[in-house]
Length: 284
Image 1 (cartoon, rainbow, N blue to C red):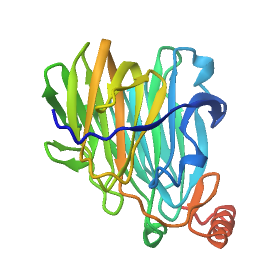
Image 2: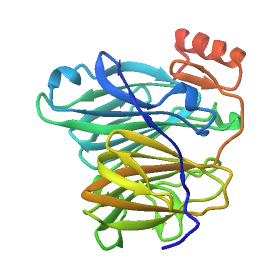
Image 3: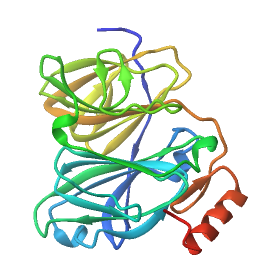
Image 4: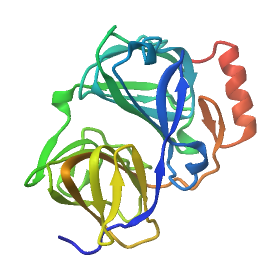
């Protein structure tokens, strides 16, 4: 095991909320953390086997100025947008959408019962790319690389390009790393994390310890990892119950953030233009 592990800065618990047409979810990365976790703007976690919590879905709504990453653990979600894209996300699949200069889309459950579980992450775009053309990509579960990193440790590499863990997606500027890590009971792992990146983990099953300080992170908790350190690794050790966690890291943009709901720009004037363009039917 390496000794230059990132340590925990603080542990947070998400806030229960609803979005779309009333979908119940947990907002893990809230707006007050955007500067600290630049380039990430939001992380929502959703998990329910009660259709009343998710059946209304996310009817048509706009985005501008950032990217959305939807990762399904269970259930099925249908995407449609005004650029003519359509796709069905199933268990283990990812949708990577670049809103750019503007897109209007819907995300609707394609099931009436059973477990619906997953995450949606918002990733900022640099100012020079906020008005780029919208783009959309569905990544089936079987196209996401899996690695047996250590005994009892499996990593699904959704995004990133770090030693030994090449992800399905690579993005410039923010260079995001997005890993889904499964640890068997008492398993341990040592992961590369660029020292240049802001990073956090969110444990969604079980419990694990992090770093040489062995800080404990339990299910439904997010741990912010220390920044401004030369550490290039992350050490984790699962409890006797095992653990599952996502690790998210990205290179900060260090640009102003101006947000109004689903629009994320650099200035207030750009936000006002985004609202005007949407109302005038200029998205897509």
